[in-house]
Image (cartoon, rainbow, N blue to C red; front, top):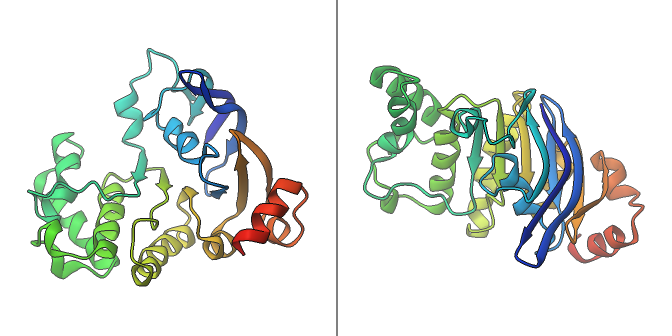
Length: 240
């Protein structure tokens, strides 16, 4: 579904990604872990061109999206993105936040979008919050709404950029639960996170990044149980 070839990203003289090659297949749940500043979030943001790569190629569903001729906005409709901070519009209700994009982009009629939004809200246990404003709901609820807003576009892949790191510890579980259910339903997911238990339970593959490179990747049992790279061994000894 996503193929990354020799991806480099620099901000001025600072090289953040140093030649990444990666392939993400349909239905995979790829979890990216590593120390702060290792390039994880930049890698994720390059996948839907929120960050423009310095060089390299990114293919999404057989389209070269790093080609300047590519219609990036059209492609992004198929890639849901959930950020660390929920980025909900404060002046719009929960329902308006969810239906805005599908209606504006003429993907759904207003009626269809509302129906879809209610179905998704019910699924994450927040039907009663449809008419609330973001300021009236908790951080965990906001993040579940942010996930619903992405799902309302009916994406082919979901990208999560540290979705629980801005939450109070007791709210983390409710967001991870929604993500686990999505994974069980077969959604293709790429998740940057510090939640090692989530990586262990949900990932089909875990990638370890440091200094702009993927140093090791394997399925969770081998990744956590038998790490090979010395830098990964050191990292796991501190976080587990």
